[in-house]
Image (cartoon, rainbow, N blue to C red; front, side, top):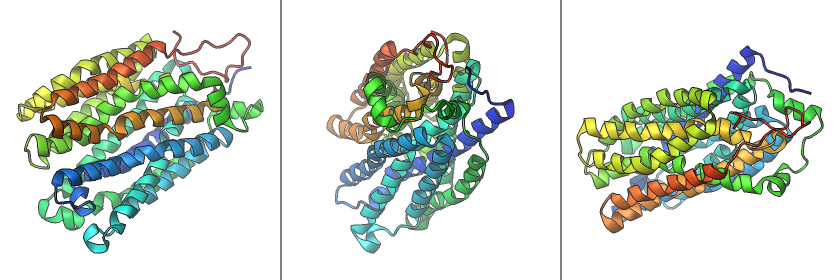
Length: 436
């Protein structure tokens, strides 16, 4: 018996709702990352040593990633129990509320140590929300899509993460005036999130549940404890998916968060200079991700994934070498090259990683493994790199750290295979993005 197939209109609606929601979620997340690099050290983490303040601020950025597995457990469980659509609405509201609250917080000078405590509490709520957001958005899109085009439609979700980053950077660039940013300008990007959440919420409420989850319910295969079943039957897959995201996660955070700190402290550039280089380079990701997604529908997701991982072993050295020139055109080229490798690897993550889990535990599997991978990549990358820079004074150890993360991803890809559909198994039980 085959699963119900979404109509073309439903597929487009699901893809757009997932994209806009993911854009908003990552706008909120990126706002914190930018502020943690440029603004929060002085406002919430004052210290006699600027390096200590920066490390504390970047560590608060990492707290959001540490909180993500809690969100993955909670929302993964209910995503496999009650459906993808409901959870996506909840995560969007939670993220928006936490981000809006950050924009209203008093600073250290106003209320003392309560200020960083409240900031970290809001950051934890962001992390819990993000723990369920990405996996749900992927499944809403992929499970509505034609299997022959899951690489392309899945990649569109990943352009949402980049669009959110681009929007956050643009917003901060508009308010990044030294005289105003520390008094009130930094609040605007966080408060603006409320407008975006209203738009995203309206779109997500109009989307229907995915056909594959409807099939799970119709066949009475909804698990009572999906997380327990996941680790009982798919623990090896969870581990490989977690390791499989390390390369892209480290690269993304280094390029979009640490680069802002490095431009200021390592290269001696003005605060807004690296943003003016980063913003046009992000367009490379927006263009290349769907192109690599479409390519994966032709040649398979694994070859594209592996090729991107291999490129990211080399490209960090090229990126840093071009940044060291301090020449705008060459710095822009460095970002563009790094983002091409990142786009190839990350574009196929939705189709590839969702295909390795059975439908009944797919939300839990994708969310938990993805968020655990981000803890050992995105969460610690800025603080580790800042420490390496302070200890060595050079960029080569940092580039080697990025290359090592991508090597881990490459090795994980060698062992992570899309399972063949068992003989006699219903079509909805295992979703295969591409035949191997």
